[in-house]
Length: 125
Image 1 (cartoon, rainbow, N blue to C red):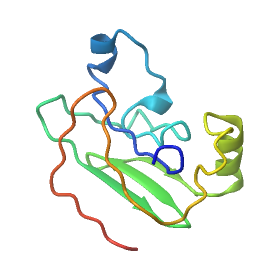
Image 2 (image 1 turned 45 degrees about the vertical axis):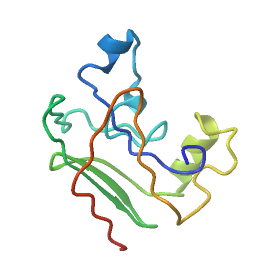
Image 3 (image 1 turned 180 degrees about the vertical axis):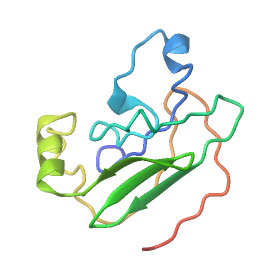
Image 4 (image 1 turned 30 degrees about the vertical axis):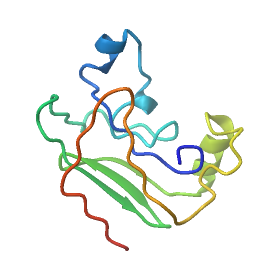
């Protein structure tokens, strides 16, 4: 799915770098639209492992919003000129099907660390 679909990144920002002895870019951290849009770090509140974080994703053809713990951290227009430029110049430039599909499956994945999910709700807008 990651080669064709936008990704709301989830991982332990507070410990991942230390555990993996590696540095993450902002576009790889929690709440990012992976490799496309970075979250507003001034509004980003992350709870430590062992506590529940809440996320909300609103995705329509007119607007995408990423929410983390009640704070809007990203807003963008999918398939806009800005979106297309980011795709063509970034990580997805050699992935012709990235962002091509406007409906399909929703995937949940980890990034080298365990994740737990609860109370998942999906609503067609």
